Image (cartoon, rainbow, N blue to C red; front, side, top):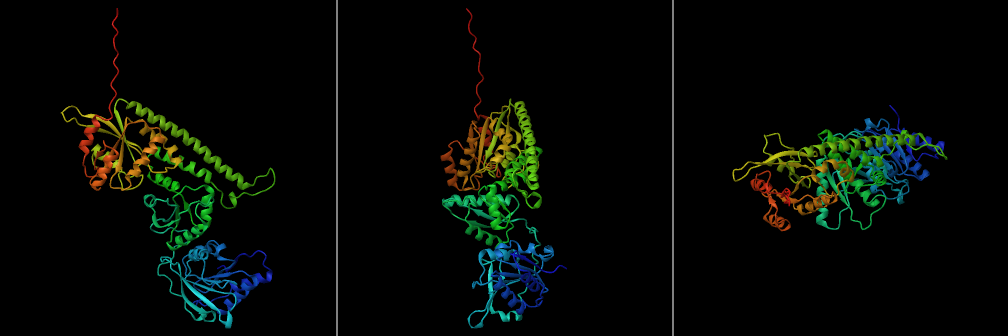
Length: 557
């Protein structure tokens, strides 16, 4: 088995200093205690000589696995520095820190983040020299990741009495191994910059939580910061990001999602400060689309959107992609490899663009073949009930309808159904084509808008649009405004009519508000089957069909 290693700020150490540190690193501590006092005193002497904090990581058998030279803030993930780190991930470890000349025994936020990543059974902190009167205080800390304070002081003792103390009992459940995901999926911490309006801020945060749940993850906490002026490199202030890093460890989050789209530089800076993977809202929506894409056309458009999003964010990691070489006219192998990856993605994007154009032409031919029939399209905010309404109007056999689930972006591919509109006078039923389109959302990523243009053309080519809103959602007026704004950006000129859904689950005041906004609104409940007959009757004569032009015969003289 490999012995402990000395790491950190080791450059410039004299050979004698390094040998003394290695002897400390190879010294054994009691298995049933916390640490050997003589070893701690030697550690303090070396810390005073180097003028650097020193930290030891000791396993459950009393063997030292790592001696870190320098502040813990600079260490990153200590668990990855240990020999055989995969084996060490499930063990009960002890962390011992000599704080140097500082008399502040309580850890700051950055040190607390590093220690929470290691999750030691106990954390001992002490200074590099005794105080007045010969007393040498030490502080024992225990991790409390589920509490408001991540590190709690269990005892303040004299350094000479540390060897007699027993470490606290380890948790019964083993810690997850390095890089392993929790059994319940990703645990996500939300990092948001809320607007000044608190009602709008609550709506946007709730929507971001819904997106996280739709992606299959679990939101575990929210960190907010209200700023009048955004930081250009990180958007959030570094103090707030340090607080978010500590909160992520306290809540055992494995991913951080921001409510703002990040530039490549901003994403890298935030990941460096949080030491956790970071995704922005656009990447989250792309992940949901990738999960929902069922058809070949849907997967094609999603892949195109993902590559357009990730191309500017492509960055080499490690030696194989690092930028090496210098001087005028020279290029290192890492830069060449990075350019190869970019060219490969660019070629793939060109091919996907050709395929999307072919898909648009194919759908245009289908629309041309259906031009003799009236075509309507259901549009609306995501999860407004468009698929449920299409299933209710279609009236097909059980199991043959469109997927309708209480999820954001449950369906992506446009689905067209032939709907029969019976005549109340006993005449023949009128047949129309009703299309369910992808749901909208505010600040829809531009990559998705461009990739799904062939899908959105189904909306632009319709004879009329039915804007579906969910009256049980208190924010439906804002959703309606968002959909109208997106349709305006698409230069959609088709007539539009509001369909107010979920009338059986909303207060009466929402019906009055909908009537005041849209006097000709249609009120239905797709799940309860209310108002569907009246909707069919209204659709027989809407939108008005242009009368065919008649050629007037000019009398000949």
